[in-house]
Image 1 (spheres, helix red, strand yellow):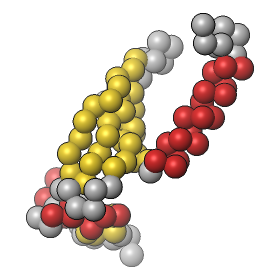
Image 2 (cartoon, helix red, strand yellow):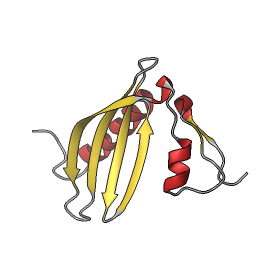
Image 3 (cartoon, helix red, strand yellow):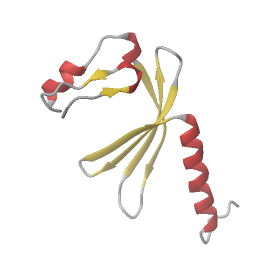
Image 4 (cartoon, one colour):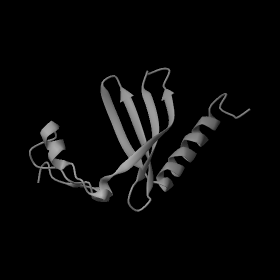
Length: 108
């Protein structure tokens, strides 16, 4: 059904009423599984596009699971996604290989 779904780690489902402020309030849960802390790891500014990239560690209160949150801000728009450790490593390795293959990309 449109507007319904579930988030990982027990956040619950988004009601079919939409994605506005009221829907977010209704979707919030007081369950301990939903609680987490964030720690900023790095902030970057892309010189050519002006995007702001922030890397955060997300630590869930229950289960001890950690994820890497990538927040990309382009003007007023945000793209946010969470990566598990294996995906973060694969992505990081691929970006490092690409950077090293570029002129001036070799580490000094």
